[in-house]
Image (cartoon, rainbow, N blue to C red; front, side):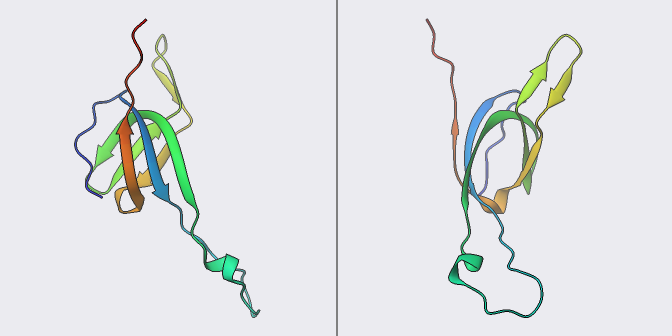
Length: 88
């Protein structure tokens, strides 16, 4: 999926498919070994290129530190949503 440009710190929910690997060595594979799991990740956009997006879970603004980084290939993304905070 081609993602539009996301602003840094923008909140996103991304649905994507993860890769799967079977057991190593000779064996009789089960159907479960070939199933691909779907994932949902919610986080802040940190960096983006044409083939990947990097989300983070937390940001400490005082010291400009980040935590919980995940890189998701855009080819694995099936859908996304921009999350907007509710105004009280």
